[in-house]
Length: 234
Image: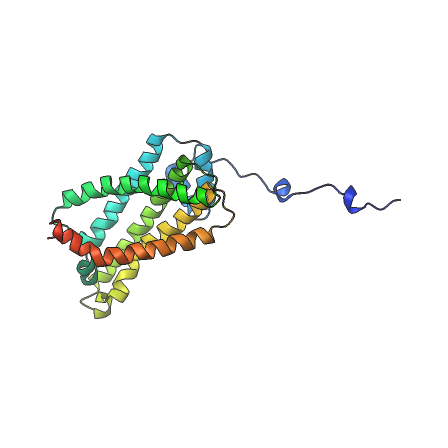
């Protein structure tokens, strides 16, 4: 018998032994959202490979707008906390606020996806603008229910302010508001990383986190003054 050398052994790669992922074709939007909470990259890749129409992507954005307005209403109108009301004044014209959410938020996501696509391709990403839009729009929808959960928790805290004054402090009142933001950054990072074939999600998450912190600080500082100058506060 002759012993086999290393050159005689067959080449075996990891992808040769991995089980192929089951297709998600035919799965409902809600079922895909539930799966995204455990494997965002998989659902993003499946969506991109389906080559969704622009109408379908726009549907994701508009649906996330509706859910976002629901969390907005719970947080600022139904049961606002004292700390949140001071930082985020209630708009005097709710119709204007709703129109702003549907138009400004939708346009912002389109522009944001274009900027993200350009930056990712500049650093070696391989996704197209459509791939990036699919990832970002899907992330906005997946994260939207988490924002509603945060708004409900914040509403519960505000109802306890009279009994437990500590719930009125910004330290306690702000974290529920940020739950949706953190969820969006997390799902956004995973989706964009998959759309551009980045091996790791963590560097993308760190970059988006730093950017989000800067935006939040600017919003908290300048937001009330801008709304007051536009006559949108009560």
